[in-house]
Image 1 (tube, rainbow, N blue to C red):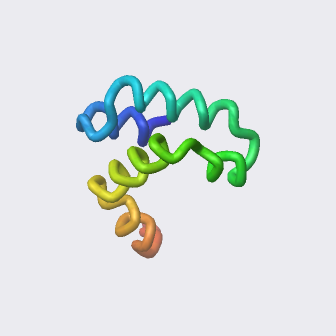
Image 2: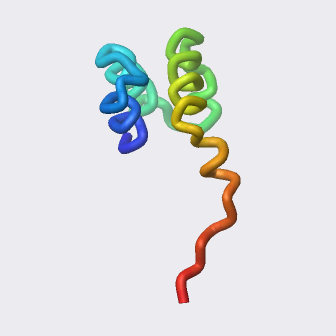
Length: 66
């Protein structure tokens, strides 16, 4: 939810999209269920993720602190 909240604060999602995506994820019991998200919500989430450059962040090697 933190990422969704950040997407909302950056205005990458509308309040309605934020609510609908959050509600859908809360009801989904498995990753496969999340992948069944309605197309308009999935598109909004994908675009917001792209604009936040989340893929690049996830591909970075972990930082190990001494």
